Length: 212
Ligand SMILES: N[C@@H](CCC(=O)N[C@@H](CS)C(=O)NCC(=O)O)C(=O)O
Image (cartoon, rainbow, N blue to C red; front, side, top):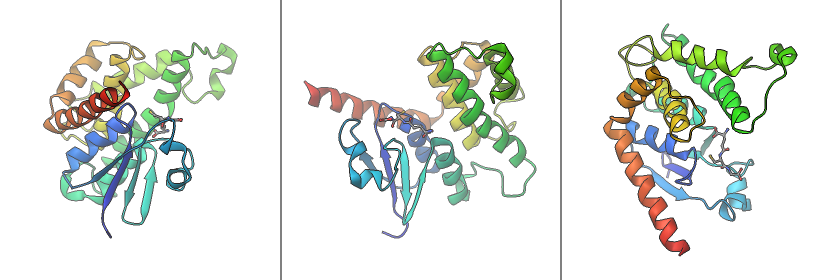
């Protein structure tokens, strides 16, 4: 179908972030659940994402991968949902800034921390995130400016950055700063987040039952 949205995911993956975004957008979409060991590495899926990773999204003939890019794409493709400042608007500055900050420096800093990889101090200048402490402090400043990253307006940047914070705290990879907890409380109270969580939790339960 020309404008069909197909969401490739696994309920135990970053696909949860895209599911939340899709629920915020409110358009119908088809879910393709990919299995880590089999379908995710099969030629048909590698044609969608050569990385063999989820999530991915197909919108008609167009494919977008990378969780942050998918969130940004959906916000632009469905402007009626008002999840991104209009193109050219000054609020695009913090919108892009914090979305890219989470996809780059935050993701790298948190992954390295989880693997106990410590950047030698003399190499901090060449590492995009510098230090974990500076990265977390910058993130804290971003979510301390108002209700959401853009002030009063919730956006796709909150879906992506908020997920990094919320899921990070849940998995113990992100420290529980009070500001992070308050921000996540606001975000996780959204009906679209609850719907997405319920849909993915149900899929996890089905996977567990099938594995018995
Ligand atoms: N940079 C990608 C990361 C995607 C990713 O690593 N997905 C994991 C699940 S959270 C995956 O599919 N892993 C399967 C594998 O690498 O075999 C994004 O932001 O979407």
